[in-house]
Image (cartoon, rainbow, N blue to C red; front, top):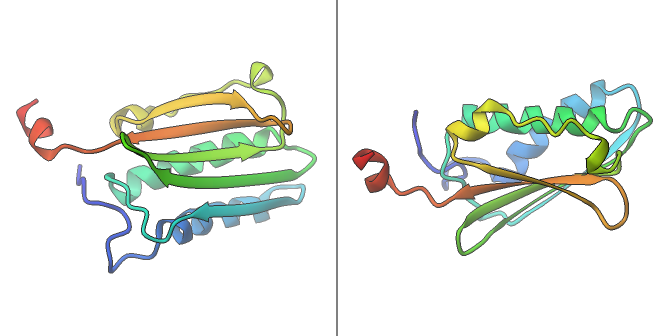
Length: 140
């Protein structure tokens, strides 16, 4: 598995990648869903494109299942002192009534997923990508 950073200078910004992945799924959804993507243009992820796309598609699909009547999906991203966090928040049901499925690809990416209720209603999942240490990976 290649662990090049997504969003290198010659790649489109991560926000564009996320929007490109989510938009067709929202268009195919039977009810209208408004998408908002808020990420700094310089945000980079230490994972490969195919794996990241697979994880995001799975999480967007889960969010859409929670909004059969439509709603809002907000995807944000930021860099923290421990890595990068991507959050998908929707206006669907509360977390306690969700399946909260853990995509297998999350483990392969060393990503941690945390679900929580949103203060305004609905639920969110935060994906925490740790900083990738190539030397540690080779040693393992």
